Length: 393
Image 1 (cartoon, helix red, strand yellow):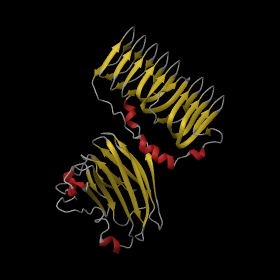
Image 2 (cartoon, rainbow, N blue to C red):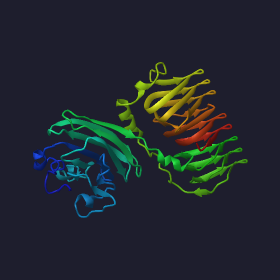
Image 3 (cartoon, rainbow, N blue to C red):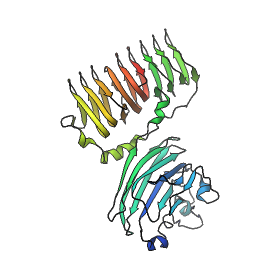
Image 4 (cartoon, rainbow, N blue to C red):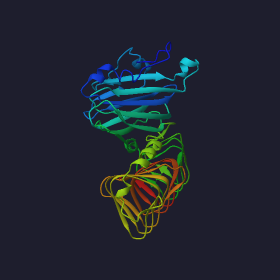
């Protein structure tokens, strides 16, 4: 369904509030409105607890106009669900180009309670907002949530939405932190990588900037970069591919993650004394064991002979800075700790051992001294000095 410019109204949610639903025994409803800038370029899919889908995976205006149906990218599998699109009303009122468009998905009755998944599929990079509303089984609007953030072209964003349609039921949304794209490379950097001294990368390196290697720096895997500069005995043992723009710099939107985790996280499960004034500090010879969960802090500091470890899947979101120094260790008996850094300031890792997935898309990350990093490293810039090494986990 598309907005008719000859009329001043488009009923997107009107189809969702049909007379049929008002007469149904279960009058519950779930409604999603995704606002985006023009030209349009963001698709959205809702997946219910049974795995059924409704939505458009790739934005195609003809699909909203009902001119065709492509089962590969357009879905309407959830019973009583609809899809709609509305350009900005300014198109009608002034004739000027729209500044926003709106994609809407909805289930008009018999909404299953439980966990839904929302996936946002951008073909372009832009800001967005997502309004979510639930109607309980009695037909009363009972809960609403708004999420805003930024998406990058080609980088799907996913969220978990828990739906309760009991009277007064609410919506709970949490980010799905998917860093699987980082598995393609050992080190990935948007703005370039610099290796000097006796540094070593034991796997594939990819950057959208210049790769500069000096001294005895060594990349044992393949390198993809617009250009490679080497001096001294520095070398790449694998294949060197000169190419530009091959790396997705922001596979995960941290602005939306920050918004959601600020309201709901697992910080309350942290032992007393470690989180003070926004700083998660592990010092001396102490050990902090993080249980499965998602934590958010302003600063992370691990120093001395301290050890930060995890049991289970741990996501640690850091708003400002990370300091790992001395003989400290970051380790995990199971999956590597996933450390996400929203800051664009320089982050220095100079401790003995790190086993982690490190995601800092706007920051410069420096590995110095004899640091051994085991995992995946994605940053705005990467610099390695001394005898620091990066290897696969």
